[in-house]
Length: 207
Image: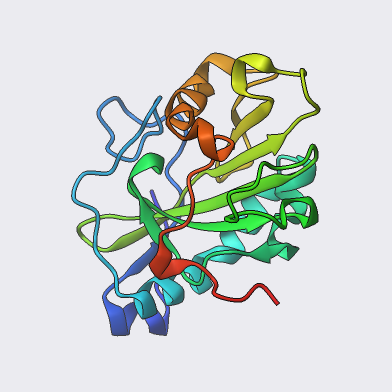
């Protein structure tokens, strides 16, 4: 039986922080991650509500992803956060996402091409129309040395589930499962395959 973690925040906002659903969900489960899983009619949160929800669920996200032992998943939360608040991303299944980048990704959002070693990480959570909050996947893009993966513009894509299991890695296990990532990002080839944070949520100063 799924456990509900209800905080004072939940009582005030009507949101419930809920344990992530099992990966082997029953067929037809609206929370089951598929090739391009998308929540229909997600709850629309104010910026304040989205920040509060993230504050409540972020610990669960950090611990869950870290269980993968993936180097990025274990430390991305200490990196610079480029978004001022979580925002819904249609390209990530209508999940609420937050954008982080390592030091080599300092040109993120400038329009410049990223150097090898730059990593962008987006953690996520879902808010259903009944206002339950679920931990979501971690999406990772890593810029590789030139010529390493020409079929993906020298980007590596990974998707790590909230329990630490690997959904897919474009260079290894489950490459086909994350092929849709680059297919989507090809529309932004001129911007080094990167979608930028909506202006409303971009940090004006990175100092």
